[in-house]
Length: 488
Ligand SMILES: NC(=O)C1=CN([C@@H]2O[C@H](COP(=O)(O)OP(=O)(O)OC[C@H]3O[C@@H](n4cnc5c(N)ncnc54)[C@H](OP(=O)(O)O)[C@@H]3O)[C@@H](O)[C@H]2O)C=CC1
Ligand SMILES: O=C(O)CCC(=O)C(=O)O
Image (cartoon, rainbow, N blue to C red; front, top):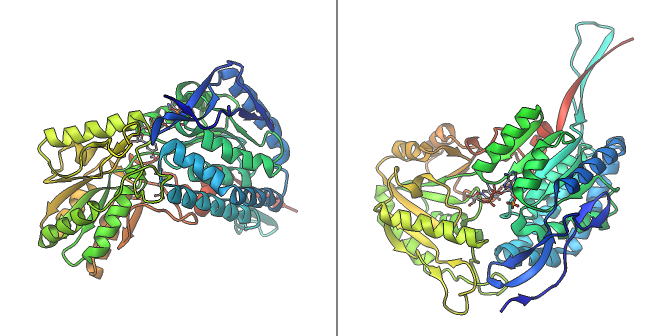
């Protein structure tokens, strides 16, 4: 029996108003902890709805860009205050739509608030350089100009932090935004946008249109009124968006997958390495682009590390993220469930040794949810599918090496290069890893996930389009440099 805990139908947000789509069609948002439970429904929009949003953004941007950075920052401070008040309301939607535990969802919401405040402050920080001109009577300097209308396409795995870390810099630098959130977390996105509305953001500066990726997402990338597009999600879709943006000659930014390694050296603090492998690999049920996936361990500590890891993994409690005792929630959707289970089957078929988990969890009333046991494979080799493809689920692959050089070579043997960690107490090992690791984030004695909002974030190789998000790096994408020369 389907339980409707809330019957609210969430609307698009266009030109400062909540509007139903002209299609008249909606889709339901289901709880992955109990697929019989519907959290709400959202608009399945059309190209007309998108046109309306882009036109509103275009018009609003003309005035928005003329405000001072401080004035735009004031709006972001207000949004942060509203989101802070609504933390439980937003975090509850997140847990009920994509499954991460309520504690993690509240943590992510707090991160969203901190990001808003960081970029609010950015409105007051210096911009540009004065460059000596070869003409002694001239003044030459650079300034930054916004792109115009920015399309923001976001995934379901960080449904608050990712939209905010794209929208907040877009807005502070004077752009208007059209957001297309992931369908799996459209209700959470609507609750975030409510905060911008309540904070009194001028009409049209931020718009949200929900609906299918192929209609609204692709439509946004191809829309003649959109001047830049920022995306986080799968590689396949990212590449399509990149191609559409390139065809139109607009700026694009893609953050995509990872196959992130952790190296455990012979001299590592094993308890620390075990705790970080579990946190980095299994928090959020492994559904982070920065999640630890390959665990590369030097042979001298392999057995000991494996034993300690398995002991701790066995203590993990799987359950509904709204319940206190749950350490790990479900995966986000039926698609995710099927995908992760199929990778587990491939791991077994290709000869990896399943040493923990590997099954769907249906006991203790979890049968209607998409729960999977935390899973550990041993004897994983470089050519196996589970060592090469992004699984995006609670699966760790243990790989044994003799030397640190072999460990780094294996860690680099991936088409991805997002995040990588090493656990070692030897400064030489640390430096070798920092120098030779092909990843946008290299972390020493710390888990592979958990980026800091004030630092650049992005990957090498197939993990990104080689730009960086967050911190001051965001200005590079969301603005263009203008070089100004003034002669008296
Ligand atoms: N790097 C990361 O952080 C993430 C990686 N992934 C990886 O991708 C896999 C699939 O996840 P999934 O949610 O399907 O990721 P997608 O890349 O399909 O979705 C990400 C966003 O793109 C939209 N989208 C989908 N198709 C198109 C399209 N043709 N044109 C433009 N936008 C589109 C989606 O909308 P809609 O939701 O309506 O389909 C969503 O808003 C995961 O298993 C994981 O491996 C997924 C999410 C985040
Ligand atoms: O590790 C993090 O905090 C961020 C992860 C992320 O950006 C992602 O999964 O898309």
